[in-house]
Length: 284
Length: 282
Ligand SMILES: Nc1ncnc2c1ncn2[C@@H]1O[C@H](COP(=O)(O)OP(=O)(O)OP(=O)(O)O)[C@@H](O)[C@H]1O
Ligand SMILES: [Mg+2]
Image 1 (tube, each protein chain N blue to C red):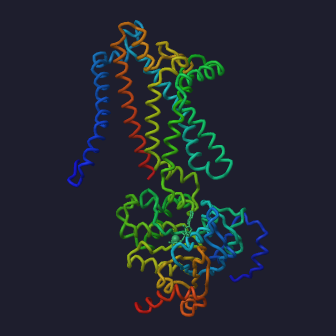
Image 2: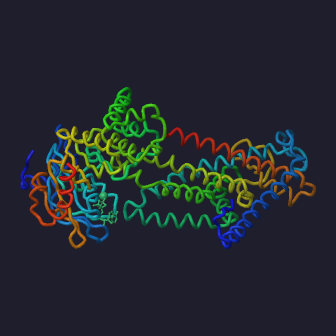
């Protein structure tokens, strides 16, 4: 890495900058080692396929995995269309006239606010609106909707940035050819923004899977297998929290659950990468 | 195809929802056109005519507003934060009228930009994507693809790699691809912004021959810095010059007339040096 052409000063700066980078690696490896080493012994086929027993100390986490999956799917089903629509509007249409620009200012302000609100507050909001006002009670649906609100700013922010980064010459050429805006967005802009969309999705899913506070009082914490989206259910992060904080002797399964969460995240990310790549390549 | 100014004025009061579709290429007539970018005036008092089925070359020093002028003709100026005043008639319609259907307008006008800019897709899709948008279907797609790539002399170079990304082509190949993409959509008017500036002499020859071949069936408005090229190709020439930082057309007319007997001292100065060069190289 170090070229001969580098001055003494540059070399010192390079080393100085390399240290924090290495610290990041170190923290990650430590975290991974901690979770894997303590969780691996609890991980087994039974753990993944059995219902929890004895407050989670025994048995498995299958109902928890199912609840988590359902909450995540609901959150994405809500946030993706709204997020895509908003991002495309902000990046491609809002600047076209005065009203659009004025509205966009407020949309951006709301998003910034939403992004900065602590998740516990979003949870309170979700409880008040989805559980009580809409009468959904403690349910996977209420939890999913609340999570959807939470990941919207992330999704919209990254997708809008991705769309804006697409060179303007494509748009100008397309307009000169008399192509419709819709097909230009579909065939050129979205495929070009696909990596940004992917990054946003991965961030959002990570955020959603990690969320504990907001879900405690929207989707609830019963460990039963949910029968519908109107049932209450416990997600992985809540399970980890409960085992670690409230259940003496639950540490081992807490770590095993955390490991499942981590592996699930990695799996989802790699599948997503494949899907987005295939889609972007097909558009070419 | 000649029409009086009065005739155009009268028609200006009708609201041209759609630009009339007609068989022959239309004349373009620019009247009292002015253009400014956010208060900064770039063009003023532009008056000239691009005759139907003829090649009109637009020449002038860099930065005098030639590209800006072209962008008004297909209302690409709408995308920029610029103010346009005056009138631009294509056939009988003032295309600056707010009621004009710009999508239809742009579908009648092909444009090749100064900088080649194929879409980030395969070479094939660069042509097929717009064609499909225009409703071309089935076998016609592949045929149009091959015909137009042959027209710009690109077929033999790319026929074995039509599915490769167009972005890996050389600059000159990209420019010819854009030319093919534009022609495949059958425009009646062609706006060419230095179409040969990225090309080697051989490709330039191909494109010049093509432009010559397209005359009669197309009205061509071509910006070029290559005065020899303007002389070779153009029926008419319009000379754009800067005065006090604002561009205007100082002279326009038949090519031979403008080159050999420039009426305006500024034209003579701008053409003089190059004309001598052309003569010596001929
Ligand atoms: N989008 C824009 N916003 C602001 N100013 C612009 C814009 N486009 C062009 N200009 C300015 O307008 C003037 C004319 O530019 P234009 O590109 O039309 O010149 P040109 O004659 O085509 O030059 P060249 O021969 O170098 O291509 C220049 O001073 C340029 O800086
Ligand atoms: Mg230019």
